[in-house]
Image (cartoon, rainbow, N blue to C red; front, side):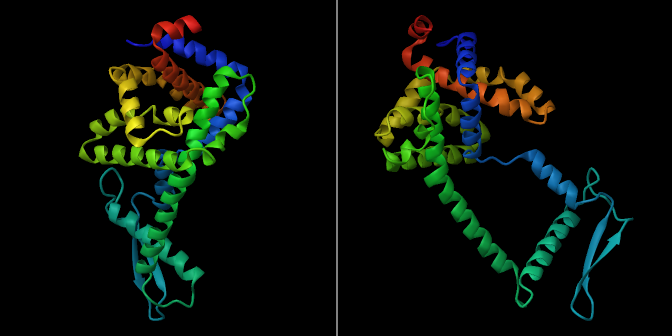
Length: 282
């Protein structure tokens, strides 16, 4: 092992105590700039729109109005859920909302909705590529400065927009693209590559003028032989994550998430300096 897990986590706790409030704020910004889909949110939404053992039948009356019949005796499907009824209910909700917003439109709605979804997806991708990814690197820069400075300025987060912005945008985009393409092959190669590319934000935070080849070569060199140990390091936070879930995420905001990010920062510094030098400096 090229790093001491306990030493890294202990150092992260010390740094967290130094600027606890600011670390919480920066971690919140970092979290919001790293969009993820919450499975629990999706599950709750499905539960709100769907009731087991209920089938929804749609038809149009003589006036052309859409009506819904509820059949309580219908088969609930697998595990009490009927996928066809669930999809039909969502389609009805979407169409009803569209018709209420645009009552004068009498044409087919699904091509319009599909086009609107494509436009929304385009803007979401543009937002992530040109704004969220650079802010992500900016938060990483703040974490690195927080190791050395007593009160690092929050302007470190937006400095990336004035220095090396184009390179940061391009390299972070390629990181996401390569990880996605590897994930298409199989889930495991995607996970391995995500660990291999893990240090790219830290490298860009310290060296925004890196070229694409330099950034990927350096992160590969840093993580060579350390991916499995880093995975074990991530697993060591599992009890904290479960405890944060019990507190409805409150503990994650005020402690666990900043603790994890600062530990990740210490891991980067340790792997760059070498285990012996890192231990001595601390």
